[in-house]
Length: 222
Length: 222
Image 1 (cartoon, rainbow over the protein chains, first blue to last red):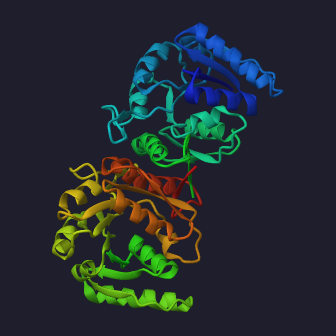
Image 2 (tube, chains in turn brown, cyan; image 1 turned 90 degrees about the vertical axis):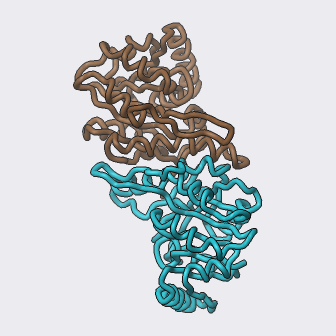
Image 3 (cartoon, each protein chain N blue to C red; image 1 turned 45 degrees about the vertical axis):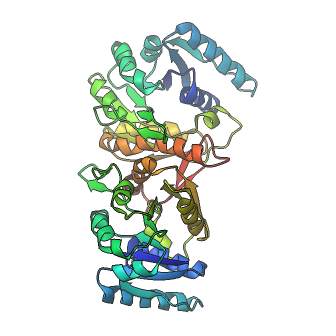
């Protein structure tokens, strides 16, 4: 399976690219608005993987081309670029492709970080509203510890929460998630349940900010 | 220290009453709108504790009297009774008492459970708005697995998230929480951060409903 990570040059995109390229045989493609940046990052990932004895090809392209080549397209871009990015790649998506959205709307004030959903009710719903006909949308990978995910030596032991209205595409994304060792995928139902999932992202930041020694946090349901 | 559990006859109130009475030397008082119900439940808890070799007195009173006798007053009532209950016990609270609120506003629809805060922005803020002058409000114990908490044989291994604007009272509640073995208290800052904490409650229910074998869930930040 070919997975495109749009905005795959940083944060959660980097972690997912490295983990899938390292632990699975899926073909990982890095996308960026700037194709040179995408290629440079893809080269970096190849070097990192090669240093660990894993010689795989990671390609970097402009977002549109990355989306065109993949059947799973992860929108690993900041929340305020999600709508633009879906629009930009819309013509590159084919029926049956799956759009995966890990973003959460967050605002910051003097007290801390707060959930600040778009008018659609959640970022996942915003993507669902913008997605072309025949392309299923799945919310996943919101609440991962990005730095830990990108460090292949770091242990995970955390959960990712998955929402989607199309059973088969949700199931596929859950299986892709669980191909990453020590990452458990939990089903949280339909996209109507996305807001509570996305709300966990600012909460994780607030917990990290207020407790010594806690950073780059994830959660485990137990 | 004397702790009153208003609505201590069921759910989270039962678990906190049993755990504090079993594991600590704090004096636990059960409150209910119906004093007979409070006394009957208090007797039940005494019997349960006695069967485990712990002979302690647990008293049951009407909420007003329970609040009058305690310096820590936990509002373990359903969210729609929180405002009424604060009003009912208001004259029973003295300066320096601490009101603890574990409730989260939740609504249910066909898709699942959703966070439905009161107009104040969160239940914790609603309590803070209603609390008498000089009584600090702390949000805590929202996201515990009530059934597991009430089963003294069950392992916890979960976190409780604590918010409050008064440092000393928040610190005191965090210490009370951590006197329960295998329960870790995490500071989430001020009451302005309560909504994201309360949002975790409907999320826990949605996770439990959609995944086989998961029930009575808590979370661990890691």
